[in-house]
Image (cartoon, rainbow, N blue to C red; front, side):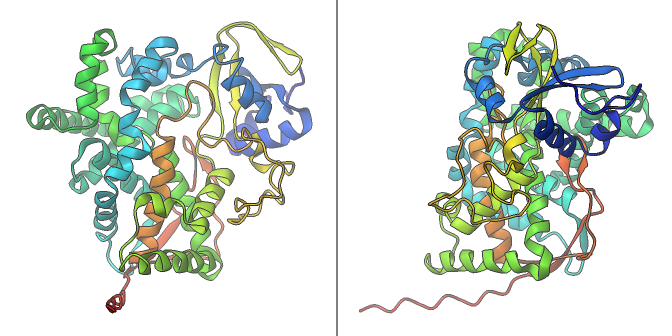
Amino acid sequence: MPCALGVPALGSAPWLFRDPMTFLRLEHARLGAVFEVRAAHRRFVVLAGPEANRFATREGRDALAGGPFWRPLAERMQCPHLMLALDGEDHRALRRLFREDLSRNAFERRARDVQACTRAVTSRMVPGEVFSARAYTRQLVSSQISLITTGTYPTEHLADFDALHQHMRWQLNTLLLGKWPKVALSTPRFRRYARHAERFITHERRRIDRTQPPGWFESVARGKSMYPHLFATEGDMRIQYVFPYFVGVDTVATTLTFLLREMLRDDRKLWKRLRREVDAACDAHGGDLPSAGEVRKLPDLSGACAEALRLYPAAFATYRTAARDFTFAGCDVDEGADVLLFTTAAHTDPRFFRDPMRFDIERYRPPRDEPSDPMAWSPYGRGPHTCLGAGMAESQLPLTLAVWLRHFELELARPRRRERVVYDPSTTLPDRFGVRFLGERRLRPSAPEVSA
């Protein structure tokens, strides 16, 4: 098996810590669909490209386990049945249980409420104020998903959402990725996040037990009856009270952050183009946004979302463990080996995307003249652990953009500054990437219809 570029003692660690996605792309182009990476004390096998995605989806479905990677988090949270840390039938049972709550249908049933929520969260800003795009999109998406899954407007809990995300972020960077030393979880700052998260969980449990909201918590109650062993511990129950507030947030919030940068750069050319498309759709519907399903089909808007997911995937790769011995691309992988499934390796492969580093919203319009492979575009992962909320995200992204374009004026705070992509824990832009809120847009009233 070929081995990735490295230096003595450290192996590939210097490149992996700085820009892992670019490093893996370059090594995939140089070494092919399978290679080994050594980074300090860690060693793992990389399976990359459409061939690897096809293997994980078909003949290798039972060869790659996702649970072992997440187990340290499940143990710390005293949640032995965390969905992410399960494989096999227990994992499939929880996916079936919650699939509808995180589906496209669930989102589109609440689309009008999501529009109102998006406007409410955004309107809290003061005209002229510069805000961190990363923090704002995280708050916004948490609010939207909370609304969809629990049916409540959560704008009064924005500070609580931040604490929950920081609490999870520190644990992911420490326990799973090994980027921070474990002592970080003993610092006063982390303990403050943990106390804040604990207060929020206690508050939510009391509210939910009292009001019995529909949606996610109906599924939790049904799950306790159908699969009592998966909801057996206090930790198993506690995680269900916070799961709706961070599930899927990284994927959607990260994509929205990058979309803000792409739309507002270069004198806002893309922003203006997308606004014309959204305004035309609104004019055809009496001044209001059309349904979420119709917004999702707007070609420029959907192309922008697809390009952001292609070039800036939040989960560009997923960690797995070899559940059995297997052979891939002529190389043997032993049971128990650490595996990195590099699902997005083809996203910048010129065999599938011409001029791949260019943000081109038109490349998805038919007829496409680029070679096509259904496994080449894979921003939501592949295999049994594919993102459960992918369908919801595909409606959530364009509708959020449409609300921004229709109702608000935004600009980059530092248009000439190019912020470097960071991995914290997933692909994103740093907190210092700022956007200026210019205020709500003044819309001209639609012309009244004239009867015959």
